[in-house]
Image (cartoon, rainbow, N blue to C red):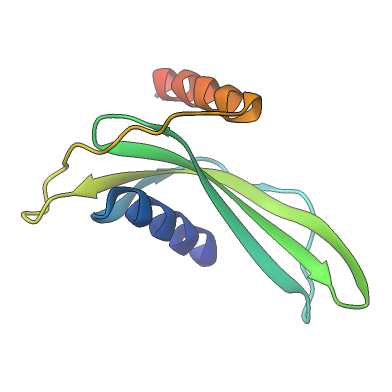
Length: 116
């Protein structure tokens, strides 16, 4: 979970060029185990941006060196908030979905946000 949070932080800060902090994380869905010796890959993708916050989908994948097939370990949605130099939330640049998959994630992010 810590690695996932770091990946989301890096993604948010690269996008905004500002310090960003974790505001929330939804439930984590564990799908497969990871074993000692597995190579872990963390992928983070901003799915939607709002005024000062953004939703980031983070996935953790494992690969066993002897059987190089990637398995999804878990995934979660993180919300990060960008801060100005005084530590207050600040406006961020919007993302523009391009692919159909990105449009779907973007629309779903708005639905998840309406539920909270």
